[in-house]
Length: 222
View 1: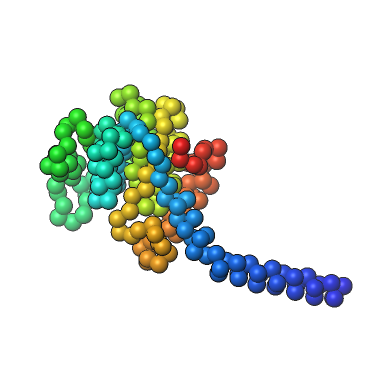
View 2: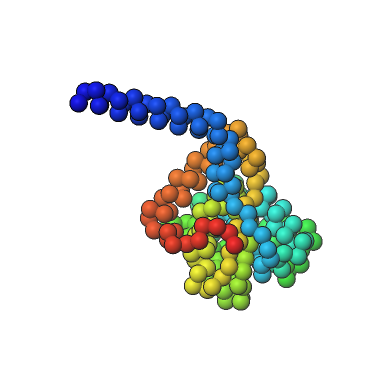
């Protein structure tokens, strides 16, 4: 019996050594695929491009949205911002931020018909509640398809949430990851990329466990 146990332990050790060796040899390919999974980019055309913000909007997302509009892949840009109470705003910031966003986009040559700024109420789970609020408005306007522009590795969770929220309206969602503070190429060599990947992977797992994202959803962009 002791001899059998000895061989079992040797087999497990050999398995771990081989696994570690394979992980070391192929770790860059594994990490690259993981990054592309968390930051999907679909293609095609859509009625609108949703520029997903929080209390503020990332510059990289604006740039990607402008490019989609200029290429004719979308007809309008929909900026989604969170409704932040004045008491929760950054110190000394009292400006009408949605109004500033609208004016900046107009200064870049966009007409009122090409852009809409939505300010949605938020509560936990924030991403799901924001998606439900935004898509309810877009459905009332007859929108049937949308690119979803999200920051970096947040895109996978956001895509699944918006897909879930859009199902009752039969609205097609196309994810479109945008990068600003770090790049997808070799993200594991960038501190910001590593932190963002780890945080968003945990949040995705949390949303799945809590049932905010059904397991029956399609995980691939159409």
